[in-house]
Length: 289
Image 1: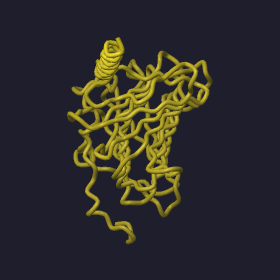
Image 2: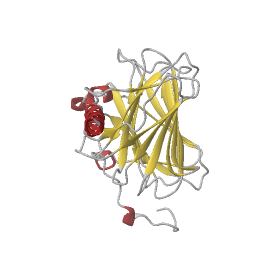
Image 3: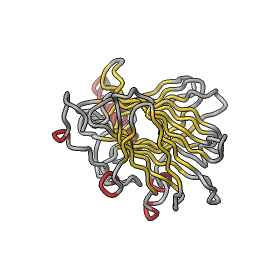
């Protein structure tokens, strides 16, 4: 009888392990694996991202070649208008200097439906690529880019119509399940594997306003890049960006800075379509030419 009891216990243990493996295989996709179970009682969760099949989103990775950037000195503003498509790509970089910029969509002289600010330590490593959805109906709009750094920190900006054949950012995430980020300071964290060079992020909601805080961390209190988003309707003006990851393992954090009545949905996946600038061409420590 003791032998039969041991055999039954061993069989039950094997069945339990098999059930766990089957559940894990059904809950993960090609390169996204959730390491924690999110519940309604917690405001902080963590997941892991691993590189897999290359995915090409709506960003034009050759924008600096096809649309040469304009230099914006510190404490200066440049504007763009006369767009022909429904969305605009804004890309910002520097020659190894810090970047601190504010990007706004002007629909009338006093109405700014969406805006975001970006801060990064190195504008050659953390190149900013973002899409701004324009309001429907073809209303005249203007994209304004401020360089809020000092005069010794210029940056280069390229603004152009997005490729109309690539579709919207939300279309590129068709078939993906978003992560709900509740309000009142809820934080979602993603651990990036060492082989991930960049990450695609799309934040949207159902006709609600949105205040989001995005940061990528190399270590404790080491923010390589910070983006703050403020939009009055995240359905009409979702926020899409590609964040470059530093060499090694990184952590991506997304925080909802709005009240609990205003959740938003976050799509996150590794991006392989955006090519980082070659570091060897930059003159670190020398004058800006």
